[in-house]
Image 1: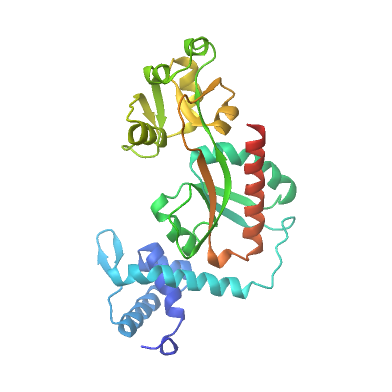
Image 2: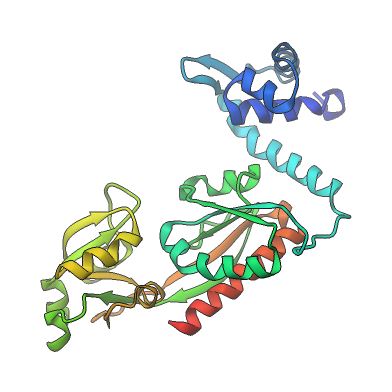
Length: 302
């Protein structure tokens, strides 16, 4: 089957069905009738020789064939859309664009206050939506255009992704003001003798500090409390003798006493990731530049 024998509009419908997992919602999104969606799906099934989607109690589930082709289809659609608008110049002063960025709550705490302050001045009509996309799904979300950028640790190299380093920060150990450890000799034994707060978006598994301690040094620390959100940490630390290891920028943001870790620990590295189809997009470039500038400010003020 040659591409010139397929109506390319069918791939727009394929993308809508994949995103919505429902023929009626896909029809509403494209402003067409549900029978038109069903007819288009039938034509694409016939052209490609695969069912593409199977009806299940939870919606239209993509077949393995559909899963293999979706990233390429979405990338192609995004490239076409970018090509159509290539001649348009991005003007931050007049834009009403909604930017979507994947960040965890640590990145939000570090970057968003400064980023929003800059946007209020330079792009007062722009909107920003931040939410966390699982690391395994970032590549697909960028390809689909669900998000414009992702602030993450360096990801496994994907030929469709572009990335640039933002910042690298050392880990430190935060405690409450007046904590007894602040008046004692700071050693590995002192550190391991504390009860620790671990922030992780996962229910199980090691954090970066614990992975390094166990895998590289053969040491273990006591995790007394495990939570999902960094912004809870100051309230807990202020009321307990727990300690929390975090990047220096976050400790500076919380304005809590901190000590350098009493062992060598690789810094945490933040990278910006975007899809290759947005490489020359002026709006994407503008946002990338601003986030990178904010990251530089965080490092300078830590």
